[in-house]
Length: 223
Image (cartoon, rainbow, N blue to C red; front, side, top):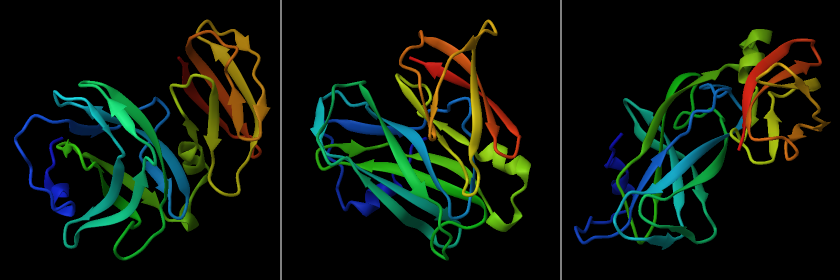
């Protein structure tokens, strides 16, 4: 959705001369949900697209803020690319953002939070932001069912490895992987990571068993 509010953070006056224009979005893997535990650290992917008619080559900063109906926008984190990002018109690049959802009066709060993410680059106009709702749970009220819903598998889709992100105090007992014909595929768990390099491209079903004997089932896409 179009949001120009974040240009206030840059003090940049938009020039109508043809130049790169950056758009930002969020892919939605099958296993992704919008619920996290307060104080927890989670990762999610965003994509940056050059929707202008000129090539883009510059470093990029990605700002994350919480929108409050009374306080306005409170910036909670900034991601820096730390290297040059090159994008021809219509090209995209993925970034994985890692966020710790600490509670504060000017930041994240328990319940529904409206999150806004936008890119800033010196040589481009940022015309699109990403806005989504995130539900933050009080860690003292998490049920076993909630924990199952909070397990993240990323990146997804993936080229080689997948990593599991679990709430504090939970660990994986075993992992089983099946192709779409129901045939079990050999896979090895190394800590919180599984390697998929040897698998053919396609969609797989994964069954994760926690130490509590609860199961999580999700789809993984091998690219």
